[in-house]
Length: 162
Image (cartoon, rainbow, N blue to C red; front, side):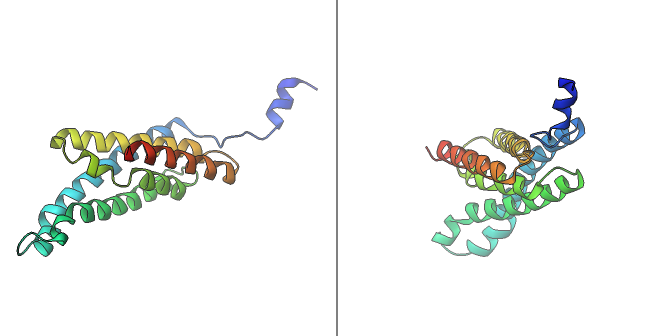
């Protein structure tokens, strides 16, 4: 038996991913980052400050940026998962969960930066996260993919919290 034919008959370790899906994942990640940043800004400035900051500075008013970022991240992740499903990316919900968990709270770190830099870093971080988690999700074994994603989430959280 030919060795090339034997190699082709074995199942691949990864699910195939087209170039369109790869580029689409990067674009979806960029879009999720920009949507998270923009929606958090709008929610903070025009919705939540009006609700919680009517009187003097309170604890609720001080927490408004965190609330806005959290809501924006959930909405952007939902939109990104929908886009990944439409793009037919393998395990899109796992990708979205990995990205949102690993990048939760990154806005507090970036808040001190100028607006344009903050938006660009949001977009870049989300693009890298969505691309990395999509790449890992392509593994045929769900359990290996899940363990690798958890390890990546822990590594990102350690780096962001240090």
